Image 1 (tube, rainbow, N blue to C red):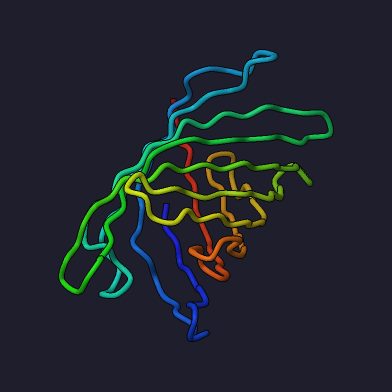
Image 2 (cartoon, rainbow, N blue to C red; image 1 turned 30 degrees about the vertical axis):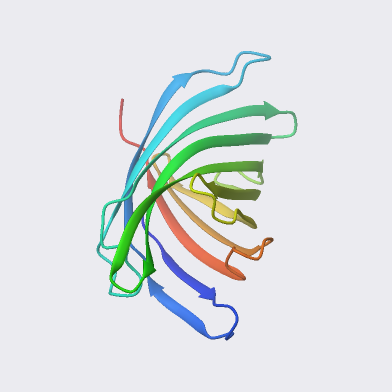
Length: 178
């Protein structure tokens, strides 16, 4: 996975844009959907600190998520994830610390055509060390270029004071053969 992000920073209202750290991840299928039980997968990532100064954590920051999904009629799906991420932050200049945060998402997706879909997602995190929780809302489109290659574009806004005011991103997913 990789991305390019643009976000409006508070309170100055200046735009900050550029490449963020890249992330490499794998998703492992654990269980198929069987009513009433959801499909379950485990998603494991780690960031790769390759972004320029000011946009990189300078460390590899791992995370994992249990991903669950239910299929509904009319090519609609509901997904929800729960996980933990370790994020590096600079509390004071020169003082970096890695902290664990609980993460969650709730997504509703809809297939529009064979290769095109859309989604709306509520997501956020809460630090185990007691920092302010973040909550954001985004939406976007997915496009299956090939059966094993998907592109996505999303944009959204922060719903809590600690979240980015707004953001946009692009992504690429590749499915490896069994």
